[in-house]
Amino acid sequence: PNSAVAPDDATSSYDKQTTLQKEINSKKLRVKQIEGNLLFFSKHKIAYLPLLDVCLDSEEIAGHKYSICFFKEAHRFGGAQSNVSLGSRFGWKTGAQALFAGGSSCG
Image (cartoon, rainbow, N blue to C red; front, side, top):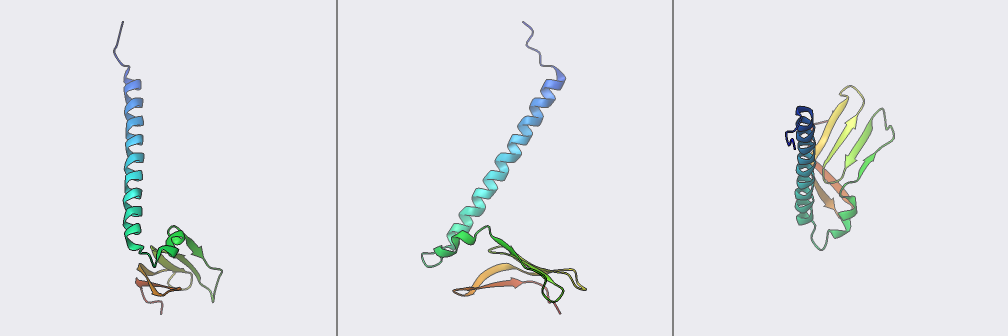
């Protein structure tokens, strides 16, 4: 029996392995991100857990739209500056008021 692998089969197998490894690496990174986020939540902040992957996009307000992704980043779109980062360091100012820091000035 001939056990040699045709070049096309070897390339196809390698491509499949590469694709699978990329998927595995992506899943491992996501697990690390979730584990890091879970460390943030204490008994008192566990109620915010459902907001972990939530992003909200506003309607147009005075010529601008806003995008807020809890625990990640906030942006303002439109106007003369087009895309302005409002911050990527997330926290809570009060129990019900989110705070983004490290962004650019809008004015």
